[in-house]
Amino acid sequence: MLRRNPRGDYPVVHETAFVDPTAVLCGLIVVNEHVFIGPYAVIRADEVDPDGNMSPIIIGANSNIQDGVVIHSKDGAPVTIGEHTSIAHRSIVHGPCKVGTRVFIGFNSVLFNCQVGDNAVVRHNCVVDGHDVPDNFYLPSATVVTGATDLSKLDTVPEPAQAFSESVRTTNVTLAQAYRRIQNEF
Image (cartoon, rainbow, N blue to C red; front, side, top):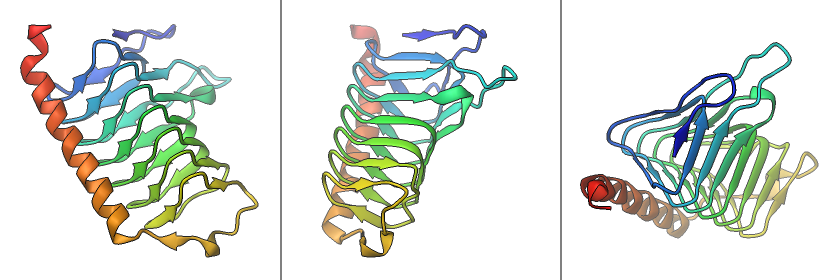
């Protein structure tokens, strides 16, 4: 479902993207080419700063927002999901937040007030709060990264994790195309 926010902003969804009918997109949102947005995802750009301004939530081309993902932003802060990026089932991305290109965010992970660099892999059940994750970094499942975390102890992305991330991206771009073809059959 696409709907306006109280300020009157309406989502812009590229014609090649697929948004599941159970997903809710509200407000100042830009969904680019070949994006897949899965069942029960909620993307809501409706809060404003004290001056009444807000930045858009942007979903980059060829990315996927999987089942039950929530993307929101505090006080109209920007949220950007880069191209070829996967946000896996039931994750939360809360702005201000920037997720780079070719990133994998695993199941049930939470991102807030952070940047995740290009080609990073954040595995399942991770929390990244108030600390940036550099390019090519790998966070094993259940890792918690806060302002006090020493990133020098983290590894770069191992090849099997990168291959898995790429297979998820490819699968979901294909799903976006397939669901677009059959969408009028529902």
